[in-house]
Length: 229
Image 1 (cartoon, rainbow, N blue to C red):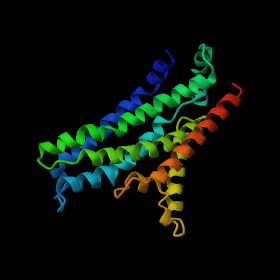
Image 2 (cartoon, rainbow, N blue to C red):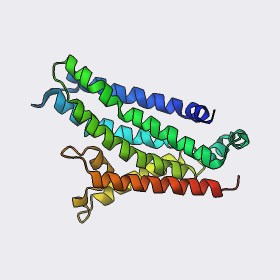
Image 3 (cartoon, rainbow, N blue to C red):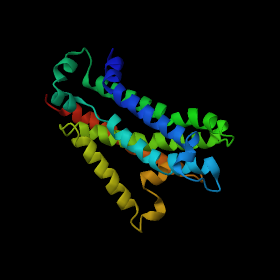
């Protein structure tokens, strides 16, 4: 019942994200000629430019923010908190379920290019390798999980409808600016750079992000359990 409740609360945002990402995949393959002349790399180059190095990647990061909006503070603002607290579950169970559903949604979203790009690119006779899509999907999932966790933590602190989303977006921009600072640039700490890493899998950065994500989730859980509603 709890998983179904959390799914019901986030299904609209998830459905919008599915449509948007699927639309980008269609645009990069079947409708690519409407985007202008192709370069020497053909459809493969267009997929990299639009999906993995450009607009779709940034859009996915923003969608991750909105999927992370939740928590009891937000429910109090929407006046649904009384019903939620009356459920025969602990706050920790609720938090685990919200995080679990969110991560599952992110995993499914990150796999949309895996399921669409190889077959769609085959239709235009310029196949895009499945291994490439799997490579980027793992990068997208790990990076978006951290963005999701930050948005979830901010939702546990700020009550406004879009306050947490705006603050998370600002933090994402500040992180990008800080990572582009010359002394830090060699470490490639920018999340957007990591999501588009093409040469090899940056396992050290992914492990660091996974640990940071777990720490942010733990902080959000602690904050929610300590709040007096």
